[in-house]
Length: 264
Image (cartoon, rainbow, N blue to C red; front, side, top):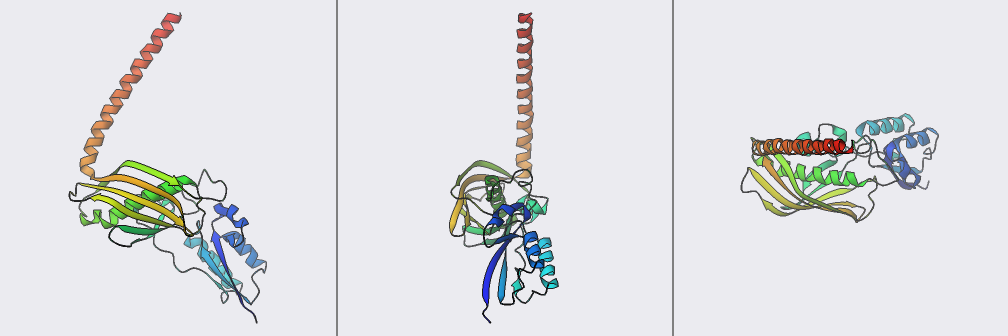
């Protein structure tokens, strides 16, 4: 018997538009096809690949359906997915909003992670158009990447300290569409000032790459301040700004009143 091997990406239902392409299906679409007998050919060996929007919950469902329909010997599912960045690294409280997984160090100045996009990520709930991933997700992934790298590989040297991050500049060039398939977030440190643990400053480049092409390049300068230090400064500036805005608003209201008096 002649065997043929195929590869199929599964993506979350929110990325159903991409499933119009050969080699891509939603989890629900795949299960429907499985139930309809599309993959009953014993000569077909199918490898399922993890696209964006697929959680372990969806994969458990897919795997159970494959077993239920007697296809486990010819349809393989991905192994366990790399761990997401921890909540204190990504600065996110909800798992579905973490975009960085499998964070790893490449060499002294370079790091890499997998992009992982949950079907119910906060940035998808009110805006999904076309087949590509929107630019704000790329920017948020870059933001989480510099937080996670700094927290895990630098700030962890002073576990008794808590850090507050201030962005000096954040410039992003979008070079290609990014689609909800596997992609990496590549991080390189260009400059670093880490002698003073109260203030860690970095200049970095963060690229999002997919299929051998670069989707975006972000250049970021930021500083991690010890929380106690920055919270005092922030509090003073907040109070000063509230007062300035309040006074400016009061002055505007008075001008409006005078103008109204003249009109009468």
